[in-house]
Image 1 (spheres, rainbow, N blue to C red):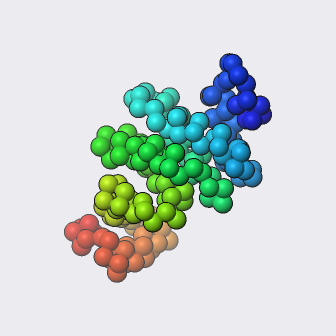
Image 2 (cartoon, helix red, strand yellow):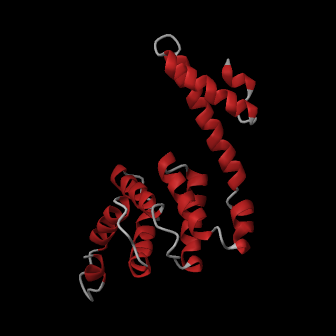
Amino acid sequence: MIAEEDGKKEGKDEKLIADLGECNLYFGCSSSLELNSILVPCLLKVALKKEENEETQKEVEMALLALSCIDTYYNVSRVLYLNEIKEIIEYHQEHHNLTQLAYQSAWAFFIRGFYRDLSLEKIFVEELHFAREARRELEELSNSIVQVFAASKDFRIEISQQCVHSLRVAMRNRVVKVDDLA
């Protein structure tokens, strides 16, 4: 159905293609180079929307989640899509417009699709600031674990013990500051 809709000369329904592609990818249906060559540009077009309404934000999140499911065995044209995914990540870093899931999905698509190309290391490290972003994500996650611990320590011992274990591992790896535990 995706290929048929994409093959139409007139009246192509890109929303239908995106919706069908998302379903296909979420359910782990095998994809091919031909199918990915249709889905990737369509999903990136959806993900590039910058409107601030709730419906558009959900569409963007779903498109990014679907992109992160693309099997890297079928290489997408790296050069063709590099600018789009880079723009999505940079826009979020500046405007904080994505949910955490959508932002992680954008990074997953970027990393899975482009990690083999060593010439992109400068973009990965210097322009998109991967290390800074990863540190920020880990700090946010650590703070979330501290909140769960505080909420569960008197009522759910097994949950609070898991939180303590997670925090110990994080401190051992120097992810959490001692002040976070107060």
